[in-house]
Image (cartoon, rainbow, N blue to C red):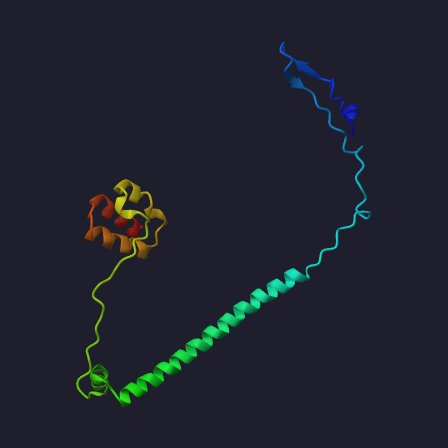
Length: 174
């Protein structure tokens, strides 16, 4: 296509202001029925050798498999060596090992079951401690009953805001 084809010197439908700047331009697009598209049968895609990419992908997969196998072997070996070291320590115990072995083999009363006394709740609203009561109330609709109970317990132990507790109770009873 040449500049004559585009009529670059004086395109039709151009209006200019006093300084010669284009203020309006009319562009005529060709009719799509008149545009000749190449026949796709004549278009030949370039040949691409995908073998290097296939080899690289295979190597990456094999590295992953190999790392997993080595890790599994290492863990198995670690467990076997730890068991052997424990048996050897029990046969020739030092002072600390003697106390541990005596405690394991003692026929005395069993130790009582100890339940954890500290429960750390996970507050289901991000940034909860810095939110106002109104902001918290606006976020309660998406919480499950369990999350609401956790939140109520947390609020009662910390800021103990009546408006928040009432809003949680309302949602729990709905």
